[in-house]
Image (cartoon, rainbow, N blue to C red):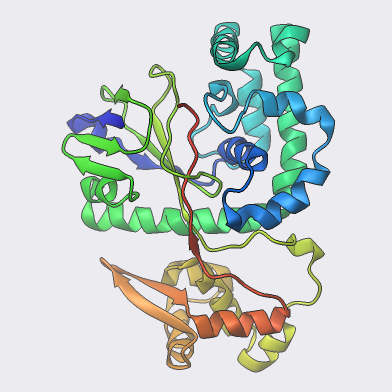
Length: 339
């Protein structure tokens, strides 16, 4: 069990990451890519991605194994969606940090090839290059979908935090997370204690996180907790490779209501829809009323906010327009970075 110890300052400083964290998604997708017979929802993504990952990226997979410890220096960010910024942070890894991580990897299963063949600075440059290349091959075609699902979860967490407070947020974070003031317990995890000591905690929702929430091994690093979201997207064929679109549906519903319906796939607020469709919140209420009465979406109140979600009928209608299956949300779990 993981136990994260809070004091009053930590509760006040607990925040939700501002966006999808590209480096964490890279690391956790590296885990998912190497696993077999798990996470059926990612099978389509695996089948398309594995043949596209060149053998030259094997050193990167070696320092990010699907079980056990993965190098902490691969994930120095706390909600940074900009890959360039993330790569710069990797390159800023200190020699001591690099040695610490390679030593831990060696203790787990042997010294990584990249540590045996390159000095520290060259090893970092190679890792940074491989991280960038892996993203372009494995995640870039799907990044808009991944970010959309993470943003939907982030919006839900922010609403809970604003309406009900941080302890309510911690208490409803994940089925394996249990809040007993002043400690957050995470089941099915290595026996580890993290004392925040006034630093607060950053909560990072993740698309590729599986099984349960995870954290970093080194207690001296800025504390965070990465946890799995409820996925609303099935990563099949990349959108750029799909033929056709929703034009027939736009002829039936109109462009605005089609956008509203597609946005509701992620479970969104009125503000989210207004931003996506480029209309006022008052107009959103009119369009959601029409779609709700047609049985295409549902609306429920979440504290002082409302959440609009697509129905089975709405999913079927979109699937017909795309001439392809659209999967319903699947609750996924997470992997761990440290065992």
